[in-house]
Length: 294
Image (cartoon, rainbow, N blue to C red; front, top):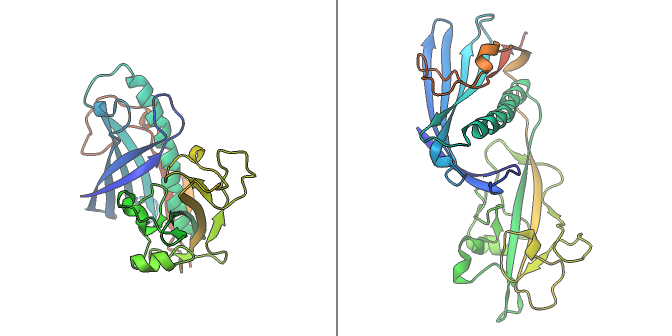
């Protein structure tokens, strides 16, 4: 079992914040079947900051099974169910919204399998905020240095103003770097454009094409920043963007077709137990992966 903690961006909904912390508790099982090995990933999704989140949890399942149609192919399916702990008058609304979000998540998961299987070019855009604070003693912009700055003193941060997980080097290296000192994860490389400062629009009537934004402190809201400094703002930030690519050496499988799930499987089963240890509730999307033909 492994827990993953992240911050998720939420679509605009009544009573919901823009972002929320999420905890994914994953269990992976490998079983031997008559046609080969089957891999099952069970995920318990917890969103403690959302309204009524103490009333339910969402359990997801991604399963890879050998295909009965071909010995060198596999079937990938994703399903989910809601575990209710308390009664709430918004139960039907929560079920409808969860179903919609799970359908969108299923498309992303299965698209990832398809992309990896086809050996297509994979891209991901990384964003890093560069933070600086004005030093009255040195008369220059420096990495944040006040005691309450915390992780901001590393200068190169993610969208939550925390040290970026790809950040490498010492504090001195981060202080001297002119671009984000990032070492990407294994298999990823930065594209030919490299790191590019990205102009951001601020709250004042400026042109919106300035790289640096100025404020009294390092706020997360864009509305509290200005694109010029009249000499009273001790903090500034700018956003860097880069595209990282990964191209597999050789594809192992190809997406061949889509297998439709029977309509009965598309019904959200309320409170029904899992049968034979399988999560059968919720809508399941199925993709068939077939091997390359030589």
